[in-house]
Length: 507
Image (cartoon, rainbow, N blue to C red; front, side, top):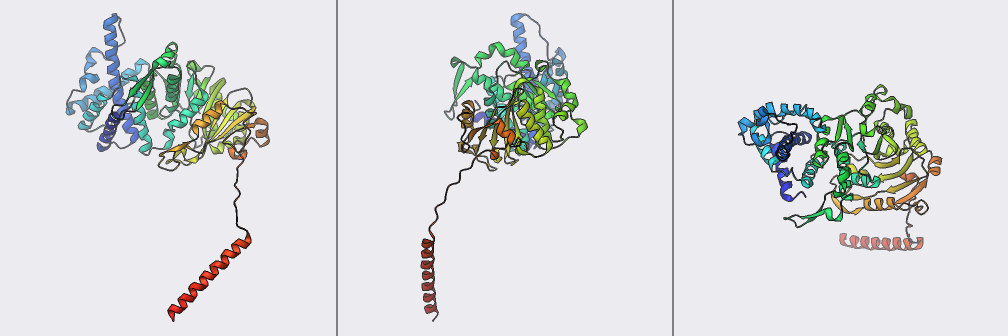
């Protein structure tokens, strides 16, 4: 649970960076990530030292004898003038050596640079991070999520952060299993992968494994899910289950740390342009036959040169548009029977170009398109007003019927403020999806209904909700003509009386 005290501590740390001249939110989070990593290295080294004393078994050290002064527990006691040059010139270069450990996060520490130039700011940051409960598994992930939420409030482009309640809807619709291999070809901060982990913890915790904590300040209760039923899958979850790709190194560092703090010790996070010709060589060993689950909100805008795109994608859909290429890529990445929930701009659903139609035909004719969830245009405000939808599909098989749902409210205002409101269609969307019955869900005036594949084909593979939804217009009661005439005569009489009074006053 992230208490008010912890939030105030994170807010204070954020303020210190801004006052210290570091105002780019991504840079702030990246620098905090580096310092968290430095502390976690020391925590893990201490843990292994204690285990070695108990078991008399050796372990691979992160700090040699001559490097002990680079440990967090040592340098945090230094004065400002000593700490800054040591951290900048020795601790951060030491991160490069940790890449030999083979962990995903270590790989992205090779280019780490300390951007803090003021000695006093570094001391304050180190002291504040030392107070954070990074050894408490249930709290440290929530803390990092709270830090990441500032990407939105600070005005960073919405592509970096998909609303977490939308992500959770998509995860709940797919219901991933602890044996699955899960991927995101444009992972950003890792929100989809983290949400899968949270789903697994909630789903695979016995009643006895649920811990209820109470916030001492507010009295609010929060359930902590220990995931005690996941023990036999722990090794798979730690290093084989989660795979993320992006071509922004900062995002990858943040994603790797985000997953580590949520209990995924060694996620497979790679710097990779997944649309490029080289991507086939980077498929993880755990997904040699393809991924079981892919969740994604790929970049909407932009186009690529044909020579930069993998030929297998162009053979399916010849286009430069990234939103079409990513859906085609996801189909290629999935194993037969693998499932995906992917956010797409509305244009993918009804675009008239040959590439748009070819993609929709591919989804309906050669795969199982399961659902089209229409989202309100304000979901990504204040940074984008684009209308979007969620495509849910399975690779292979055939499409018989498609579930449509018209989400009109997501629990937040659809203006730039995005404040919480009472109206929320997402729980109903999930419930109607789980209880979907093609023979019963035929009311086209309802928010949820089913359309047959045959009708979709007849409509030119149009997947826009408006193509099939029936709007109900209420009849308006108008007064009969004679009543309107009577009111007009009465009004004329009032005007005439007023004119007469005015003439008398004017003499």
